[in-house]
Length: 102
View (tube, rainbow, N blue to C red):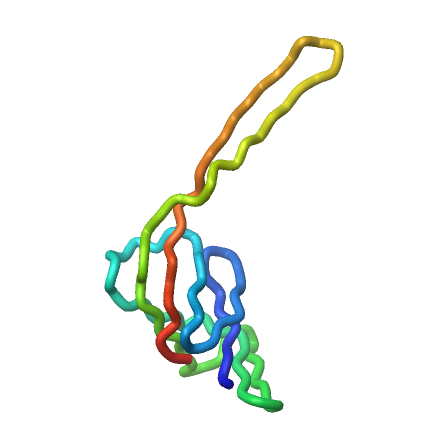
């Protein structure tokens, strides 16, 4: 089974054909295809090839399944015995991808 390690949104993901992953929001419409050129490593079986920093000519193709927002994350700060409480929350914007080919 062929796999690759790609870089997008400041993070690295290990992907194979058929995988569904959630990445930081990409500015593409649902149903479009995305090509990732920043392939750090790829392997098949026991062999692996590692780039320095990227593998030349290697690409990963994915289809955009959904644009959505993640669950709410709450940041709660307080200082004991001072009566100080601060609550702040946010929801990340994410893109769900289905890997078509490695």
